[in-house]
Length: 95
Image (cartoon, rainbow, N blue to C red; front, side, top):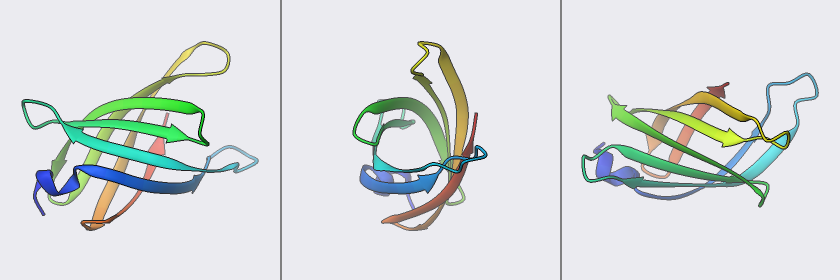
């Protein structure tokens, strides 16, 4: 798979890794910058936005992300996706 094939919009579903395992859904938009690095924008539960940048190798997508929490603090983490097909990414994240 080539990095250009990842560009597009994805529907996301998942659950947080906290004790309550809150479910979420939203979308992930992937684009490329002029240096062919991944640029990511997540919109979660129609309200929270997270941004990130990353790289792609051997069908693995790694994105460092950040967002502003409800407490106005900035949180950072990493998301790792295995690219199952052009349209399906399966992954996990950690702050």
